[in-house]
Structure formats: structure tokens, C-alpha cells
Amino acid sequence: MGDPTVSGVEGRKAEHLELSVNEPVEGASGPGWADIELVHEALPEVDLEEVDLGVELLGRRLRAPVMIAAMTGGHEGALEVNGALARAASRHGLAIGVGSQRAALQDPELAHTYAVVRETAPDAFVVGNLGAAQLIDQGAGRQLGLADARAAVEMVRADALAIHLNFLEESVQPEGDRRTRGIANAIETLAERLAVPVIAKETGAGMTRATASRLRDLGVSALDVGGSGGTNFAIIERMRAERQGDDRGIRLGRSLAEWGIPTAVSVAGASGVGVPVIATGGVRSGLDAAKAFALGATMVGVARPLLQAALEGDDALDRWIENFLEELRTVVMLAGCARPAELRVRPRVIHGRTRDWLDQLGYA
Image (cartoon, rainbow, N blue to C red; front, side, top):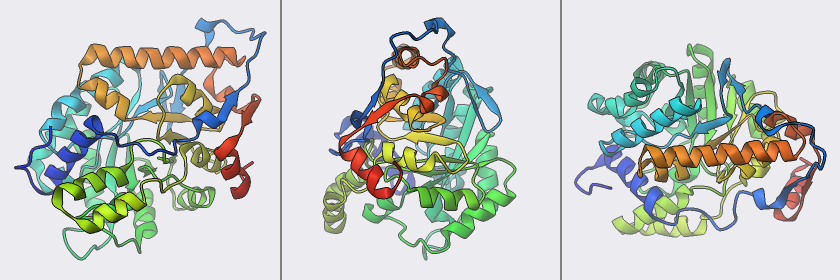
């Protein structure tokens, strides 16, 4: 899937897609769902078909609380994948995010690999995407600003713009942008001046309650916690470093493969700050999603399993989504609830490593 003849950002995006699909790119520690037990209600008093999975996100009503998480774009191999994911979002009433749009801002001929999402799913809730690191001067390459953010929104006619916080990835990546000073001011400017809401999105290292509060105060409208336990970009960038013979990236990627705050812990921390929380990072089943809702998530984001299904075709995507939603609906009913948001006030048991995290961070 990756094309060694393609260079720069476009080639990197192709490599990310290839490695995400084909290689073992998840850390060993996990997202924390295994440490969370939901409590069975023997007298649920709610029919399965009465369970309502609908949710409101930033003023839009969705049929299910699932976002097809930002994954790809910026190379020709992404066109078919994004089209398939967009069709699935439209069929099932899900939100969908695109991958970082920097490649298309640098080379407008790549814009169609992102725009296909809106063209294919005209009524979907679509989230655009830019990297936070590119919003400040890195000393090389073009710094992105408000005009670029507006262009990214227009490219996919986005309902919101995600600013992704991928500093773990940038730190390991051979070509990474490693300056961070000024990020907060740049995010605040976009939140104040863009015509659409801004979502702050971590990409695999999670966030604390204090960081979630800071981001809220900067004006972001929602938080995608992107916790550790799912697709791990330290591992992906280590694999890319191995291909390039980059000893620095190999060393850091190995050392930092388990770096980050587990998704379950990140959700518990962020859920009390007063903005919608999207739980992304190792959500692999409807039961995982239910546990995220019990911790206070508004939505869940799913990336790698849907990417793999998309490469098999629309039928495989539909089966995966339908099974996921059936499991979520069943768990909600078995916990005695009529909608996922009610899980947060139902009993639960938390133990193991996740309990240690919650206790020591003061989230319990």
C-alpha cells in the first residue's frame, strides 16, 4: 500500500496507512477497558428496541454515538478508503473525521482525497483536521495559520475542525516538528475566529483533567482524548525509522512505546470539564464503548478496525458497525438504561492499573 517512490508528507501518509493496517501497532499496556466492570441489572425494565443510541454533538443529532476517527488522506491510496468510510458514515448516521489536511494545503492536487468524504456523505457530520505543531514556526516548512484553517474547513465543508496534538509522534518521527512553544495561543486564535467549532484531539498519548480544562478555557468546543492503548504512533514511527536507518527514531520509539495516559483514565479526567468528550484509543467493541460512556464520554471514536474493514469493502464495514452497535445497545439494556448517557450514573467497578491511575491522579 505504501509507495516508496512518493516522498514528503504524501509518502509519509501512505506509510502510516500501510503500517496501521498491516503491522502490530498497538501498545502492550492497553486502554484500560479490561479494568472496568459494568453492573448487571436483572430487572432492566427497558425493551431492547427501545434503547436509543442517538446523541447530539455540537448542535447536530447523530443516530449513534460513534465517530469514524480521523485516519487518512493526502495520497492517492486514501481516496477509495475515505470514500468507503464516508458511505458507511452516511448509511449509519455516524460522524467522520479526515486525516491531517496539511498535504492538500501544500499540494492542492491532493484535495480530492479529502473532499471525497463530503461529496460521498453530503449530510454527515464531518470533522476537518490540522496538526497543532504546524500552527507555529518550526524553522522549516510553511507555518499554517487562520487562512489555512479556513481552507481546510472549506475543502471538506467541515462541521468542525480538529486540531491534533501529536507531540509523541512528532518526537519520534524522523522528520518530526518538535517545537511546541506557542501552541496554546495558536489554538485559542482558531477557536475565537473560525466559523466552526474547534475540537482538540490527542492522537494516542491521552490527556489529563488539567490539560482538558486548559483547552476548554482556550475556547475549544469538544475534546477527543486520544488515549494510549489503541494505534500507537511511537511504534509506527519507530517502524518508519527502521526503514530509514534512523537510529534516533528507533531508540526513542522503543523507549516510548508505552508512553501515555490510558484512554479510560483520560476519559475519566476530561469528562468533568464541561465540554463533550470523544473517547478514542483502543475502542474495539460495543462493550468498550459502553465503559467509555460510563466514565462520562459523549461519543467514541474508532479508527483501525474500520480502516481494516474498509479495505474489504462496504459489506465488511456494515457488518462491523452493525455488530458494534448491537453489542452497545445490548449492554445499555443489560445495565438497566435506555440510552448510553445514563450509564454514567449506574454502578460500576474499577480495579487494577486503571484504579491506580484514577486514585493517584485524584479522579476517583
